[in-house]
Amino acid sequence: MKTANNYFVHESSYVDKDVSIGAGTKIWYYSHIQSGARIGEDCSIGQNVNIGNNVVIGNGVKIQNNVSVYEGVELEDYVFCGPSAVFTNINRPRSESPQRGSDHYVKTVVKKGATLGANCTILCGITIGEYAFVGAGAVVTKDVIPHALIVGNPANRIAWVDFKGNKLEFNDDGVSHCKKFVLKNDQMLNVK
Image (cartoon, rainbow, N blue to C red; front, side, top):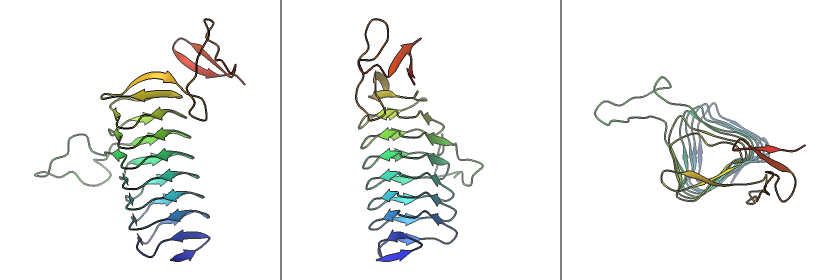
């Protein structure tokens, strides 16, 4: 067990040089944090997780076991990545003519509060909107709007969710049952 600067790294994990890790963050068994990665405060990095070079992870992020967050991916605050969630970072990878370096990586952003279910796949170049919820096993091939609940292959929106991930219902006027959200032109708005 290694503790430094108010964060925890299990002795079986490896942290490269030139890495920034916030206070209260815990990095569990057999994980690797690569050079240039920036991890915020109060994060939980599960077993067998790889955080690629120059990846940016916000505060309060939870990454479950067996997830690789490749260079080009950014996770904003309070993102949840379920077990074995998959990210990509190159559109057309080839072994015979490898594309390496940040010039070839396509940026993927997962916005604040979004949830990525177990075994989902996020193609590169995608933005997952704030508080969106990607169901387990979904294959995300296009941007996801905030508060959308998406499932399937390819993933499609089937409902809307609130800040806690609860499915919302709307009356004929487009007002949610909790009266905190309104549907207008197929977009969900938060009523302040």
